[in-house]
Amino acid sequence: MALPELVQDRGYLSESIFASIFFSFALWTFHPFIYHSKRFYTVLIWRRVLAFLVASQVLRIITFYSTQLPGPNYHCREGSKLATLPPPNNVLEVLLINFPRGVLFGCGDLIFSSHMIFTLVFVRTYHKYGSKRFIKLLAWFMAIIQSLLIIASRKHYSVDVVVAWYTVNLVVFFVDSKLAEMPDRTNGLSLLPLCTREKDGRLKEGKGIRLKEEFHMLLNGNHGDPTDRRQRAQMNGRHDEDINHTTSHSTLSDAAVSANGGGT
Picture (cartoon, rainbow, N blue to C red):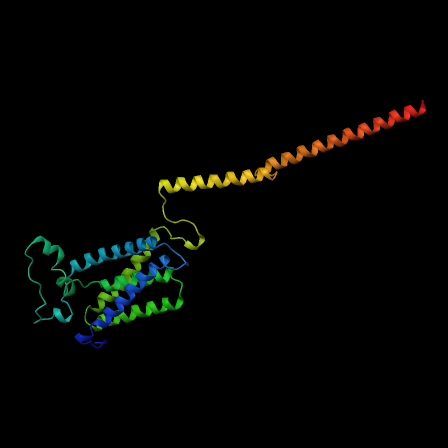
């Protein structure tokens, strides 16, 4: 009653917003392959997103199988030829639910909205890992507009959208707390697991660089070990003291001999 019902010809409005959010998020996650500013690894961020989506969809399946509501959409109303699907003839039709007809004109999978699951997961992910404040505000605004359009186009009940808002946010919060935090890629450290060959190659490369540095330091008269430098400095100091002591002793002896000779 609060939202005026959109005519059937304008049902594409909510789908258009959903498609723009979906493809914009997908392009953003793959931007490290194009731009030099890399803040994350695409595979790591999609691993988190898929974990959020799987957990939310499992709860959704349990919910809408527990309670079947009459679909509010136009093709689900009494008198529509698409209100009921023909009975399946084999197991394959049961698994595919008369694909794509069962997907496009389904009437029972209502609580809670799958469109809102994807939208909220994408918006929350960009809000955490994105860098543009304006795009973050725009994404949340589009999520709110999409919620209203879904109800206005009678694709879902208001309860489907409301339950999706708090369920998905709670699921993302819980799953995100269980996953290891994804560090920032701008520090230049490798975040992906390395195979044995890559690890061995990096170890050999590190050893080679260290040997070259030690070789150059030896050629320049320096050594990498500060303890050894202190020992050398102490030894050099003692050696200089011995030389000075010997020289002064020889000088005094020569002076004494000269004095004795002059007296004679």
